[in-house]
Length: 73
Image (cartoon, rainbow, N blue to C red; front, top):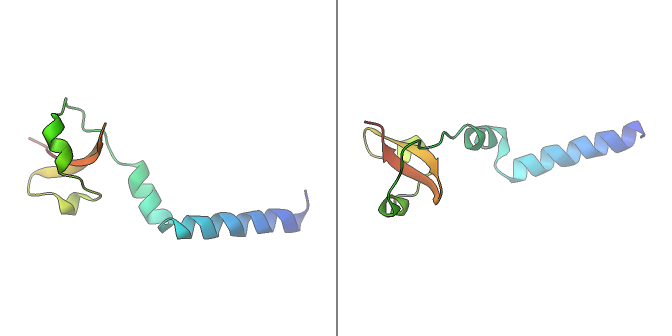
C-alpha cells in the first residue's frame, strides 16, 4: 500500500467521525452502561441521550428499547 492511499483513508475516517457527531459523542455512546435491572415496558417512554436529560436520582442507561432514564436507588 502506498503512503498516499493510507493518508486518504485516514482523512476519510476523520471526516466520517466528524459527520457522525465527533469523537466525544462516540465515546459517550460506547461507555453507556446497561441498566442492570429488569425494566418495565412503560419506562421505554422516557428516552434520553445524556444523564442531564433525566430527572434527579435518574441516569440514562441502555435497555432493550434504547436509552432510558432509570432511578439509581
